[in-house]
Image (cartoon, rainbow, N blue to C red; front, top):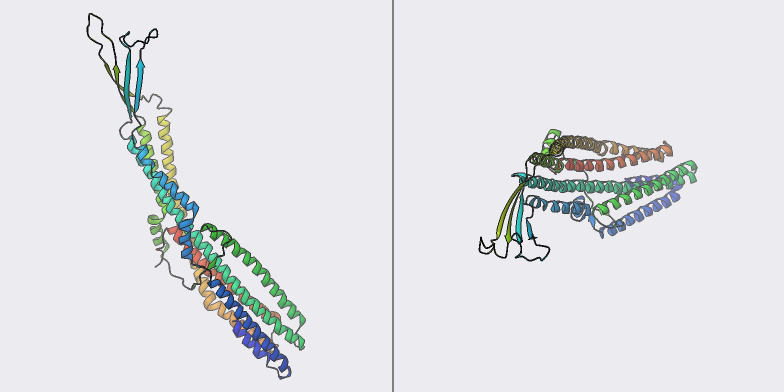
Length: 455
């Protein structure tokens, strides 16, 4: 577009024989500016080529490898994997060593018949089924933690892709802005030429300079926004916030067709980690309810005690004193079940209901996210086609027509500038639609739980 306008401007500058000298000078000036601009762009491209260009996929892989929050979640999952074996094992046994019935006047082991040294062993046995239920509930907790890791990976990948595409839009917006700033400078040069030859107005020059200042202000804002997005992307990838982010050059025209919402719902029911996590939490709550019901039954304790004695029996019994062996069996009696076990059952029943409703709610959230992302993608897809195949070509033709008319003083300068500003805004909206379409695809992949969303 810049080259085409420059050619028209050059033809305008040499069209008048009366101003041939001034026209040739302006033509050479414009050609020099274009050459310098192209050279500057080439040098900038070479400089950026020396830096690592980041694709969205590469950014996601870096974040999944290096993000500290994801690493913390992974280690939490690994820690919970060690719990089931612990809670499913018997309590540690007790070993007792006792000195029994020593006389305080002499502490002589031979003096009294019941004086003895005891060695005992005892073990608590929970009611059958309790340990299995504890281990089962802890296993479900660990599985749910694994799904939470998968869910965080999905969300992290979506955040990275979304941020990447926001930066992509800002880069294209800045490029479009620079192109239009150069065109405005050329318009200013033409307006000055017409003014100096008595064919134009000074207000045309001032108007163009004002629009150029607006472009500069907009560029400052866009640069600041890009910096913020770069900081966010670096943070997600666990890189220094000040690192320069240079995106890879890609073809943004691909707008693939996606599956229907019904098909996406079915895929999400099987693939979305957060739904699997909620389902597993329901199973864990069910196991804990069964365990609470088991707690109405007693646990048992079995003990064995061996007592060593010394000394002799009375003369009428004869012989040395025999050692003693004791066996003990105990049981917990749930005499407070109305205040404890029954209340625990009510508690676990409510927790199970809570988890079931949480699953239903999460399914609704997932389906709403799929529907919203699908709508956003289809809207951006249609806008992209409209801008690329209809509005922008028409706006370009309008600018060309306005420029030709302005050269022969049939259109005022204000309308020419307005037509160029309109084209600029449409170009920004085109790149916005590209970014929004790809962000919607990213959200859709995250909502479904995997990338198989295309026809």
